[in-house]
Image 1 (cartoon, rainbow, N blue to C red):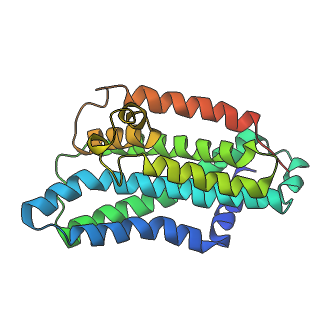
Image 2 (cartoon, rainbow, N blue to C red):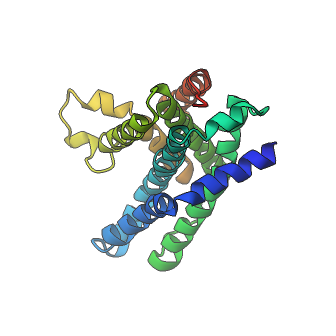
Length: 240
């Protein structure tokens, strides 16, 4: 059953390859566009700071515009009603969804790192690779569970796709990606600093630079958000 569900999730992902291409192509586009603005040591510093952010964006895209959209579409076409007559439970559906996509994220992440290293000379020394992988898995689970909750919480499946986009771009807009937190109004900064994607960037940055992941409260925040949305995604799961 687990193998069959993993196969289903992969087929659902490949059913609309444009979403996956957009999700993985956008970080590469940013990499080549932004890298052209720097030279020498400035380029190395930029890549060192930006690479975890690019990978975090790819994880978000894979969860919201691929997994979330795919699930909302399956609800809209009533395909999930067939699964209700099988032994598949919400926990099985969600866990196999994470397992089927985390491998794809790893392929992207290491391809992205390889391109940054071979083409732009990014140094790969003194990295906490084990910590980086563990934090990437945890971050992906958080994004995936958040996307699944968003895709299920509304009764109207078609409306869920619009809500997924709103949540995704809201997290991205106030996620220290396009606008540095220091340049934002003082009243907004405390909110942005607790944006889930900011916590993810903090954890990936810490492991990428072999620093302390327990500095601040990002690890606690990501674990807490993962647990909360894990429960909510199961409670609000819809087969119709």
